[in-house]
Amino acid sequence: MNPDEPEALSSADAEVIKDSFNDCLKWIADQGYENNDIRMGHCTMYASQTTDDFKITNDYLIENANVKFEPASLEQYTKILKYHCDKKGISAQECAHDWNEDRTIEDSFNDCMKWINAISDDCLFNSITTHQFCLYMGGTPNDFNIVYKYIADHFVKQSMENLYWIDIQAFSVLFKNHCNNYDIYVKEYAIQRKDATAIRIKEEIQKEDAFGEWLGRELN
Image 1 (tube, rainbow, N blue to C red):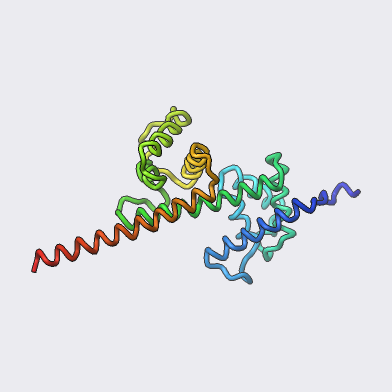
Image 2: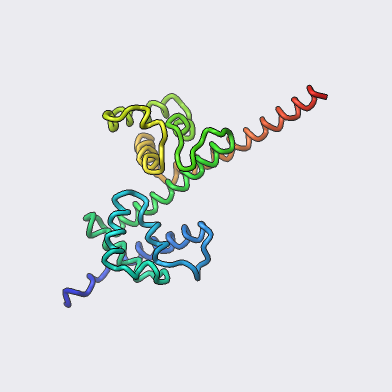
């Protein structure tokens, strides 16, 4: 075998990567891109949610400068995913699973932002408060305990002021920790939270409409 040739994929890995590539294309299309306009550069965004993944992807693009301008293809996607696997010492299945989870959590983050924007003006462009995160995750005393215990155990050197605003990176860590505590899959919990948020927004709109009607009667 030529040492410069890539190692052949097993049929299982090839199928996993193909599914991951299709998930990637769907995610990009959801951002508003037409299939004919999707480039490998868009695919690298799918693969770069965490700081570590961003660095690995950036290293790959430095070594392969023109790849990001090429039309999206399963062949190039496979090379990028395998590059990540080699750098992190994980299997193709683990890498594809991590990327899919990251996208699911990003959708939950956006859903949380949508909910906050619907009920208050207390929201930054790309961050939420710790309190808002706890409410989004269920708002029970146990939800608050899970979040603040994790913060106390893992961010002891940081002040609560620094942790007041949660960005997508912190959201991802805290979301996965919540899932571990409840022994539930990320995708399943994300669906639960999204459904609950839709109900919350509907209830808030109904309350605002009812208040507006009451206020109108009082003023007339």
